[in-house]
Image (cartoon, rainbow, N blue to C red; front, side):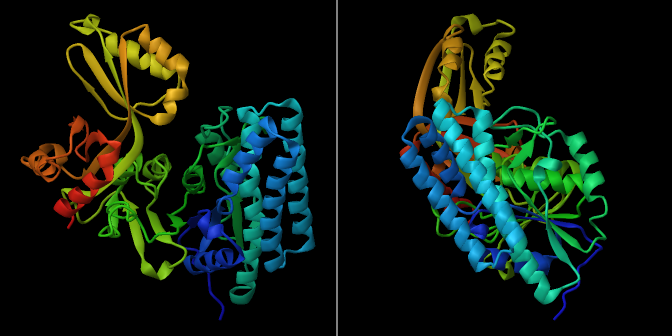
Length: 459
């Protein structure tokens, strides 16, 4: 049966690594794309490949070439198997083969130099998405041939449109340039009988150097491109049916949320929810593009709509946990009645490009939470120690309750702390947002706190 594309709505769909796991997963995701009428499809690397590529880069730099060769063979075998099962045409086979040769050459270069810069690492990681997108273009064409032979899938190199700065490892998109290039290359996408398949996570500088947006950046790529082509809907397809009230792996009673506001979802993503990359919503909020989150393994199960206005605004919508947090406390009497002290603190963090999550202050102390990974930045802490006495507490969990009107609801704090009365709370952060109440507990008690809070507020 022929399936007609809906030209009234321009849909961008993004598929994660598990949705690209093998040939069967790709064909299933292609069926979802066809059903949704997706015109631009953004794909991640096949499941586990990005980790393999990072391991390859590090092994090439620090270990024997024999060990690096084993990883290259593993990557090649995985993608060759999918290519065989999808009956990849000769032209695309050659394209994929050339990419794998390029990957090996780059690995040899890193091995010979015994150096892997962030610039080289970005180039290495780009191969995951570049390979999977070639394979998925074929899966899409096989699906279209059966249901809609008038429409064809074309491979698009994201680096032709997604231009970034040169901050390798976590590049920032150049929004205005992207909009112009999208208009130039994809201006007619709404009415063309073409489905474009491109890569998430990767971009390029204006000089053509490959960059990445950081881990989890495929969602961000999809949102940037959705904004660039003025899409009506952005879909994020993963392996779970929408955004849950909390992590189902921690709390079996967690359930899917039918709809959530942009502001709530932003808080939820920022404070630990894994479904959406924290930066994903920025372009969608700017352009007010509704975002749907669903499962490619069960598209009929529904999912979660993320949009500006929602009909239901509960006090507590969901809760998140961010593990492996570090609490840094800076203390000095010089802070008392002294202006500019906080400026000096945040300037140090700005200079080292380290972000702070939650923060509280007293007369002579400031406490803030950081990701555990910040501990490797010895220069950061040396600069902080020149300013104040630094105390570091590790292995903590940041618990966040996300909802509405939180900072104007009497009795909420009592209800929270009654439910976790025997769990020590190290720091509380409340008041900056009406959508969030967060606090720090010992890492060993984080999951227990989530279970109790979910039972109390969501049931």
